[in-house]
Length: 186
Image (cartoon, rainbow, N blue to C red; front, side, top):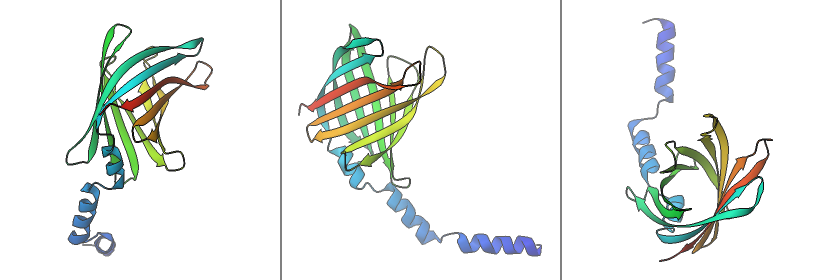
């Protein structure tokens, strides 16, 4: 073994944590904390009033749905199952929200029967506004290209939440395209 290889191996050995430190890091990573407790507070059935906004239409379109939230995998993830009727079409969707203990951020995924893609977004909780702002990408089915999206979930009180989704219009200006006001049923 050359002198350079020996020095490189010694540096790696010095910077590599020992097995106890590795085990402790994984235990911390796998243990639900305060953020997971916050997600668990949503457990139950919620009624949702949905409003959809379009750039050239001052009147929003309305729809109703219900959401059921529960924690899965020993309290590590929040699963939301959504059902409703949107203009005579049965709507179903599913979201998974995680709090990654390592990156200190929320990660959300979304799928529904109105498309074949998946939205993945990441966000941070803001105590001052009692909200999480998620940013991610979604495919525009018209162009087939990814576009940036923003979603803000505001915890109004323990039984009321507001979700706002933002899009970008043809001139590149952000506008609110959806708002869902949810109230806990039970």
